[in-house]
View 1 (cartoon, rainbow, N blue to C red):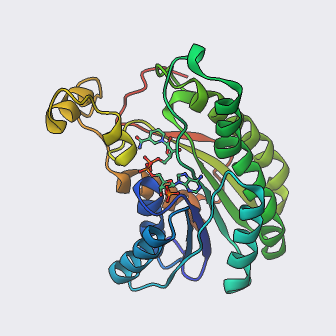
View 2 (cartoon, rainbow, N blue to C red; view 1 turned 135 degrees about the vertical axis):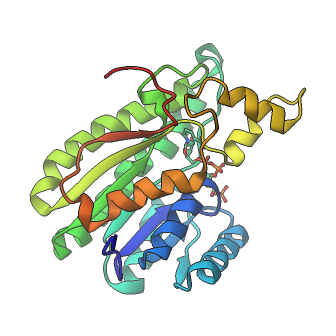
Length: 258
Ligand SMILES: NC(=O)c1ccc[n+]([C@@H]2O[C@H](COP(=O)([O-])OP(=O)(O)OC[C@H]3O[C@@H](n4cnc5c(N)ncnc54)[C@H](OP(=O)(O)O)[C@@H]3O)[C@@H](O)[C@H]2O)c1
């Protein structure tokens, strides 16, 4: 299937590794002009070079901390200047820490808000004029399966992601007339560094991964490229009538009916 992403300009945040990197790679492989952002400049440049070598397409790396408004503004300005248009925005960021509700203070709540909720609002607002100008656009937010079923110790993440779900619904409503779609992708357990860091230290990592997979109907943890495939489809011309949704990529892990 030709996803008609040739020459579309895609911004992918938090893309030096993990889900963001897989998404940037998949979009570049489909012909999009990809601009990636995350904090560590060296790692980001390496990733851009890797994706270019793999796909043959140019990837631009612009360092940014998505929890900082001034850096986001600079990122979008530079990204827009690169090709004169922005067609696709993939809102992604690092995840907040896991712990019990009672252990988080105001500062940690504020950090999670800046990183996982305000960043989505800021980036979406700044790309909107470019999408309005071209008469179409795609905004895709990477959130978490915790918006569908309770995940212990994820109160910071879940609270912010629920905000994104509400925001995306309203944005889908407001941006529909501009032919801009807004959707959320909710990962279950996808093997990235973030997940590797949460594995128990008292057993070897292969056993720990197998243990985690036991409760997943498909019997395994997901691969970043499996989530990236959905994001790439949502970014495509073929997904023009899908908006305001939250879609899980979790191997069937969420058993809730609604
Ligand atoms: N993997 C899963 O199974 C899973 C499940 C549910 C939800 N999620 C969510 O999906 C998102 C991506 O997770 P992942 O598994 O891909 O994580 P990861 O492998 O740890 O990668 C995180 C990426 O985010 C970047 N990043 C972190 N803080 C940033 C900031 N302030 N500004 C810009 N970039 C930043 C990192 O680069 P720098 O450190 O250089 O900035 C890195 O590129 C997270 O929000 C996570 O909570 C993941």
